[in-house]
Length: 75
Image (cartoon, rainbow, N blue to C red):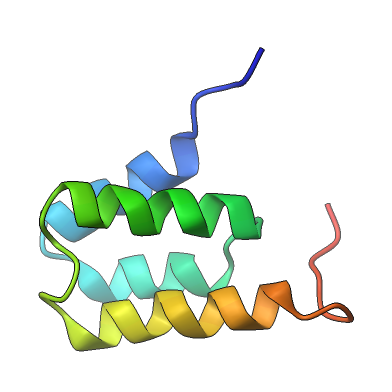
């Protein structure tokens, strides 16, 4: 049984509300790669991908950082 991803919904709410600075700050401390991928797909589904270059760059940069084999965040 999978749980609903609350983190990506909260960050998506920040983006929809126009607070991209807070969304980028949350993206920088993302809990996992899975959460970032869900956020990326939610942004695409809401037609918000590509609207803010700095937001898209933060998502792709942090995906690359968290995907690296030696870098991970402890629970």
